[in-house]
Image 1 (tube, rainbow, N blue to C red):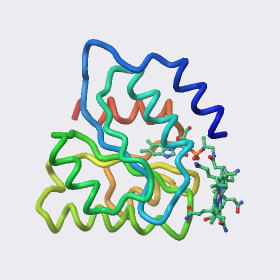
Image 2: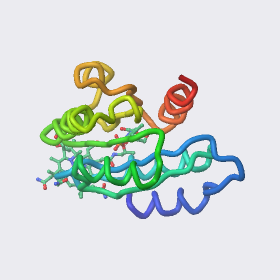
Image 3: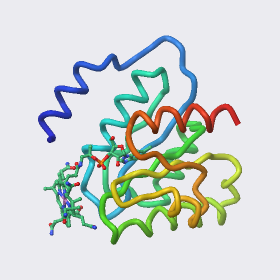
Image 4: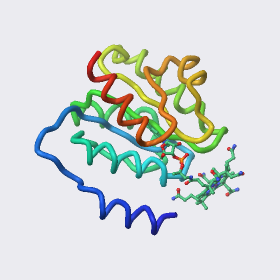
Length: 143
Ligand code: B12
């Protein structure tokens, strides 16, 4: 899967002239799965979004610090483990604590993640795959 992702990334155009929004994205702390997240990053870039990929094992405070530095519009998090889904909730809580919940839209994804989970933790959007991710990010930026 890792090798296939590298081939897909090389084939997808990485940059366009118009930037329609800035997204910080990563796999949450404690989770090393990054194949799906990397596909999402590629597709977002191919659709003209500026994306800062934080990689994997990203703590909530790091998502926030990097979003501030990058002047992001959206923070996206990925998790493949049920045991690390709670980190997406922690991210929402830390954003609220820092008074930044209104500043950034959040989108969550990963195999165990659902719209119901997004609603429960207060995330602004959920996407079931990379194509849906591009659609939801576009909708969030239009709000
Ligand atoms: C590949 C894989 C691995 C690889 C990961 C390699 C890598 N660099 O990512 C390796 C071998 C390292 C691995 C390790 C482990 N794995 Co694993 N792994 C998988 C496997 C087979 C495929 C996951 C995958 O890549 N899917 C393909 C991608 C394309 O799909 P996706 O991630 O869902 O992403 C799509 C969408 O969800 C969405 N999306 C994803 N993220 C985001 C984010 C945003 C913002 C948006 C908008 C959308 C979005 O878009 C993506 C593209 O369409 C799954 C089983 C399965 N069949 O799903 C198990 C699985 C996820 N692993 C599992 C486990 C348990 C582990 C380990 C804990 C095993 C162990 N005991 O060591 C470790 C994890 C260690 C850790 N701390 O993270 C379990 C999780 C169980 C659970 N319910 O929590 C699974 C389900 C296997 C199983 N049936 O038990 N794993």
